[in-house]
Length: 433
Ligand SMILES: C[S@@+](CC[C@H](N)C(=O)[O-])C[C@H]1O[C@@H](n2cnc3c(N)ncnc32)[C@H](O)[C@@H]1O
View 1: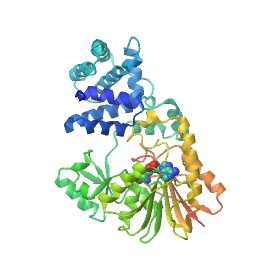
View 2: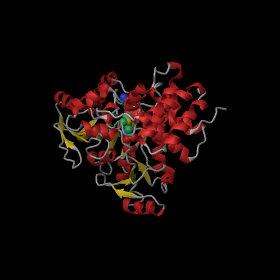
View 3: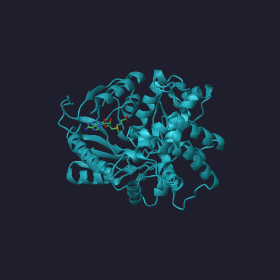
View 4: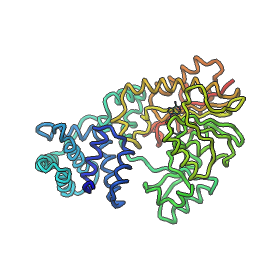
């Protein structure tokens, strides 16, 4: 059986696996806690450290370079992450200095790198004697350079706010299942178990928790009282405006957050086809629907190809394309995106988005509405994509989106983290003539 690591050693190992080895943050953390039994408090601390190092890697790595006499060898790279864990505690959270240093140093032994104790101890103590201050924007420098340029170019007036928001801990947002009760009633239920929540001004079914908690602490979660979903994702149900009895295709549906919201809004009275290319993610979608007691026809298929499923004879009333994208609007929730995304990914994603738009348009009924959306802030995946689509598609008309909490663009609308108080999403409503 694997040795049980203390929280700091565990966090160093996990952040090394995520940042250097390319593992996804969600998968690394959930696999780790599946096989290692930690108290809720230790779990929380490990997560805080791993998220923190993923967020602040650029800054922490630059400081580490000034403290180390020579870089740590590749075969010992986990030691480099022990140092980053130590610096994160001293710089960004209120760990007492002695614990920040001593406990971090002891992680070396736990990771069978006893020799590194003096190195880490020396670096952290030197740091405490003269903490680095940077003239550059530390939020910005904690993004890879290509991302800095892409965000600066896209949003010159907002990029500072976006970089800052990307490094902050996001709020935990809920979508109340209004088939079961109103959000006011659920808010009261939360209060009774000591969970403070405010009404989300930008999402009719939304609550924002004063501080995050485990979903298992939310009253009735397993019985479908609510779901965890950011405000920006909840806005999509308003824009798609599905009415009871309509036929709807959710073309990139898994794990099912938006499918479920649409069904909840219509009291489950929608002919819903929920498609996803991934079999594994379709299983997650089925679990979402089961928990919320909703029904949809779940289909594993490539939505960019000629349909091999039965579509309504006159086409769908509504189609949602929540397109696969770079995720550059949700970095605050998934800071590993900074480390895993490459510029070449955007080219590939653009191609998939174009193919989805073209193929799915043919399945929309005349007079029907398609909502194209992404959780990206890059115009290439968003406004430019739609500008080109409209130019080559004679029967596509753009509906105006005047949302009080989004920027109205020439083509569609955009929310930005740090500007609109929610994740960064793009939306475009297209109507077929
Ligand atoms: C942004 S996520 C969807 C999130 C989902 N709408 C929700 O609210 O929970 C994009 C999804 O598109 C799926 N996908 C990617 N390419 C696809 C394709 N060609 N056809 C269908 N689904 C695809 C991915 O597997 C992924 O689950």
